[in-house]
Amino acid sequence: MKTLFLECSMGAAGDMITAALFELLDDKEAFLQQINFIGLHNVKLSSESTVKCGIVGTHIKVTVHDIEETLEDENIVTSKYNRVHCSMNNHNHAHEHNHINLATVENIIAKLNISDRVKTNASNIYHLIAEAEATVHGKTINQIHFHEVGNMDAIADIVSVCILMETISPQEIVVSPINVGSGFVHCAHGILPVPSPATAFILKNVPIYCNNIQGELCTPTGAAIIKYFTTHFRQMPLMCIQKIGYGMGSKDFDTANCVRAFLGETENNAPIQNERIVQLQCNLDDMTGEAIGFAVDLLLQADALDVFITPIQVKKNRPAILLTCMCNEDKSNFFAELILQHTTTFGVRKFICDRYVLKRNTTTQETVYGKIRIKTGEGYNIKKSKPEYDDVAKVANLNNISFDEVIKNLRE
Image (cartoon, rainbow, N blue to C red; front, side, top):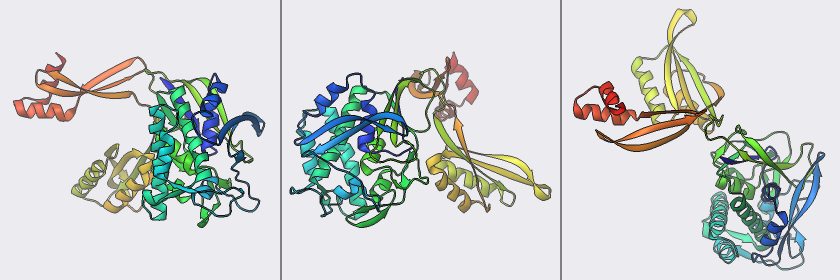
């Protein structure tokens, strides 16, 4: 399977993602020719080779009226996106700027000389940004206004990524957990924490983290692009790498400031280590069987991946139950709170696990008993299938036969 993996250990911004994907192209000049003649008036994209921590990569420069938006400020980390999208009045440009709303942005995108698919993707990404801005500012999407020059800069980033994604056409897009940075950003509304409120809103249900790097590493534009296109968030899967791209940011840090793009093949028949899950556990020695059963049912109804209990013996020779709940990493806090609320435990242990899974698929087949769903798993030259339990149980009850008899007849 043609897979694109984006490593976001230094965050994600629109120009960095564009540059990383740009480096994967065979004909880079053709892309620059295309993007500069799609109808973004007074906007120009150019590429330049740059070095970060001794590593050579590409920086994509977007100029509007021959002026490039910059982030530099000696005393405070300034967010380009927040600066232009929060409509600050202290512009560095002599020419006059207007403010435009989402409908105008969509109209600009609709008139560009790009495919319908790119138009749809670009508009959808902008909707993610507008929704985030509207939510954090307590307004409706239609009340949000964007600064024209900054907005054209963002449109260029977003449309460029959409064109590159269409050109590269990966079947699967995997993204690492995103480093959002730390510290503060400065915009018209004042000094805001990193990640900015809009970025934090967009990245809900996405694995993120921060370290000691001071600065806004992930912008709302970068967050929206990543959120929209990503198939899975996890560490790099088992894949055969064919191309690598380095998309460089404008700032310098002790760590190479780049988004890395890996393009390659993941085998359809390999059980790829493609899921990181959490295992939550606690010991229970003072609950009734009914209460434990209630808690187990509650966790399963909340869509835990699996919940099971194991008889154990704890201190003072007490018989007890080990409760185990398996869930996705981004829902671990939610399930830990449920366990603390509905059991007598004072603490929940958390174990992070990588699990190997077969590719799963469910189909409906016509059988002697009518339509029954069949669950199939494939990988490592292994293929196994089994009918869905609920369907088999229903057939057994309706026909007054045993569960095993239904399975036997389905196999014949």
